[in-house]
Image 1 (cartoon, rainbow, N blue to C red):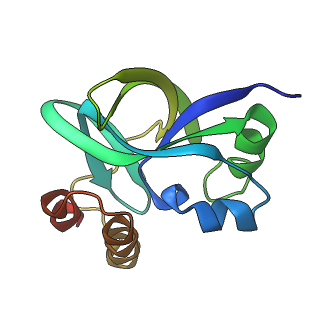
Image 2 (cartoon, helix red, strand yellow; image 1 turned 135 degrees about the vertical axis):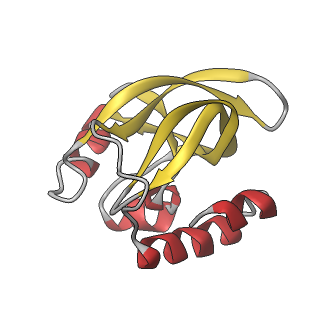
Image 3 (spheres, rainbow, N blue to C red; image 1 turned 60 degrees about the horizontal axis):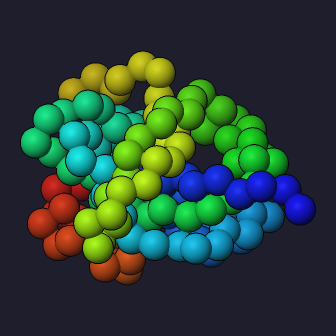
Length: 136
């Protein structure tokens, strides 16, 4: 049985139904956050180190093959894995992989449609309302 690893998602891959549609079968799905980072939206989402900030999302376990398949699609192939320390709602912390862009989107670069879809998903996942409202 292949080993599963923890992965923190903060963008549209937080949607488990989307992952199922792509053949992934995540388990141990939990709301979580990563302190010290901020969400930056351009054409795609990424995280930037930002002391005092916090990004909310979903932590789940996937097989390496599932992760590799998810990030092999052309629109997300440019993401690279990074290690983060994820905080669960009970205050415990778990190391996990998180995928980020190598190049930070410019502050004036945006994608209103992506932001609106991400806000809807974040609302459905019951992420904190002030965080959801900050997704622009």
